[in-house]
Length: 253
Image (cartoon, rainbow, N blue to C red):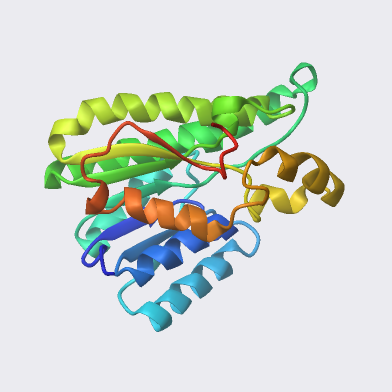
């Protein structure tokens, strides 16, 4: 399938396990990918390698953009450059996010602010500025990565859970604001997958607590999430907006 032929997709935090899986899936379907990363550590190298890999494997034009999503001026500049380079912006995937875990009564204020800044403020800034070209072209897809934790809650994740729940409210509001502009806004709520945060979970906790809580009895894969994103961002989902799609093996039902 080439559902994304001629489409330009911005994925924030695209160098991580989930972000890169989404990028590869959409590039395979014909999308041009704007790879967002924050310029720390070896993330620039990873972004450039992903750019090269997708160009060789899938063809098309892909480009890496350094921007800290917590800084609105950097987000604005990035999106302006994407539109200048590609001529348009069709899909935004708000994927960048972190989780810092403490029980609520021990949660440090500075860590709370950090999680809010990346998970919620970053998604808002990217959405706000992506809507400028999308409204002009009368077409767009905004997909924010929420979490089942934003629906069910989970011990020790007060900041993470708060931001993921807030993304749902933000998405529903934006969906109503732009529904007549050819733009949809939806959330995807992953459950426990074999990547990202789960890589830091002790094996004993994963095997004895996490997996037994999933009705299907196993962790999901990044491809499960990436393929669901591909659906929501495509014209197959053109009459779906303001919704939360849980991809979680039945965890939140």
